[in-house]
Length: 115
Ligand SMILES: [Zn+2]
Image 1: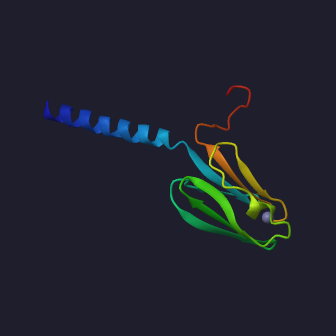
Image 2: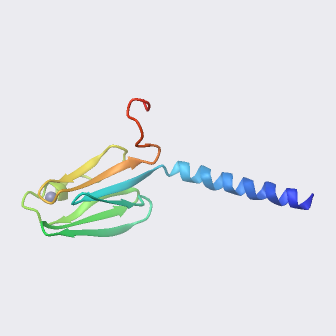
Image 3: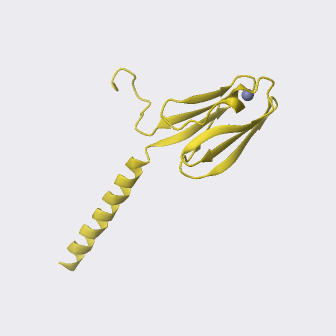
């Protein structure tokens, strides 16, 4: 009987953890030189992406992400406003880099099924 109670408490805990994950349902996907990096949108940090083309720094703070530094000629990526909503994207064409807010609910299976 005691064991059963323990199991109940344990499953409740797992359920609570899952619910918490659902509320944080997006992350930052950085694609640099065709290489994908996933950043936690809720963990502040500065991430540097360097290639033979140049350097970009992506800052994540307060649930927003933006390009805080770039040595590309156009500077369009560095001038872009911070992004925080799913689907928003910052692109640095010269460096082949993109920063996008992606929903974890998006399952890359078949396009026609998800509405
Ligand atoms: Zn750029």
